[in-house]
Amino acid sequence: MATDAADQLGPVVDRLIRTVPFFRGLKPVELVAFLAKARRVSCRQGDVVFKEDDEGGQEIFLVMGGSFEVRRAATDGSVEVVGTLEMGQCFGEMALADKQPRSATVVAKTDGVLLGFTGDFVSSFPNIAFKLYQNLARIVALRHLEIDTEMRTHMAPVCEVQCVNQITKGMTPPPPGQIGPKGLEVLARLGQPYTVAAGDYVVKENSFGQNMYIVLEGELEVSKVIEFAPMRLALLTPGNYFGETAVVSEAHGRTADVIAVTDAKLVRLNAGHLEKTPEVGALVYRELARLFSTRLRRSTKIFMQTIGRKCYQGCPMRGR
Image 1 (cartoon, rainbow, N blue to C red):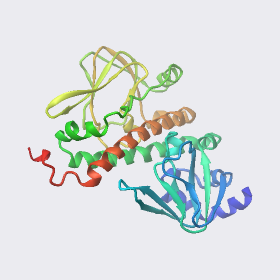
Image 2 (image 1 turned 60 degrees about the vertical axis):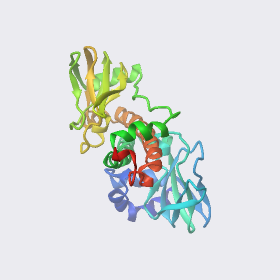
Image 3 (image 1 turned 90 degrees about the vertical axis):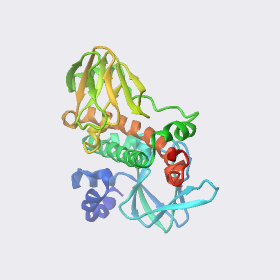
Image 4 (image 1 turned 30 degrees about the vertical axis):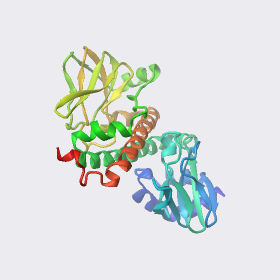
């Protein structure tokens, strides 16, 4: 079966690398070897691959034949078709980032063939796991940044106080990223040591950079100005990291200020550092994909209940 799969994949693998973000940067021989061993799933028209809110999904799928519909439940209880997946398209990537319920239902529109693979399967290919998790972190991060940019474009400061706080009431705020003691030891050797004095800015909102930072010692404050007043968003302590978007997208500015509360010792990391030790880099990018996924789910919920409904059109609060 592996040989048959490799023969089928050969003619299309170059196009997959060019057009599927998850496979970007792989060599054709690497991708053929990877996909030839993936789980093959044959679907009949009407078959459900997975349902919205299904729990425990750990598999990402690549369409190798046929057509599949993506459906989501609307607020009025109806079901909306929000997309169609054709040959060469991936879906279910979030399963590699976290173990949260599926965000949509996928149904076979025609007879079709899928290739499926899990995080454990990806990790069994150490030579390419780094690139795949780097791509995954970039995909999820850019989705989150697109939604965040759309909301910042349309929302006024009053929205944060009057609407967003109500929507997120009861939701657990996404915690700062955390790396355990063993990971800290490894990454401290991999990156560049960096010290700051109390009161120093490490990054400023809307600035650009290539580095993420991991806190080794001391405390730092994440804050931004909302309605002309600074608001603390988080307090960072040893093991926390920040500025992680820079290692997946240098085109987006920092989203908040980070200031040293005490004298602090940090380590700076960029994509180049992670490439030097791919096995460590794969773990870092997998963790970043998980973090961005948490943020994306939260932002999507806010977006769907506000900007997605064009709440800003005729909003009385925005006219104050």
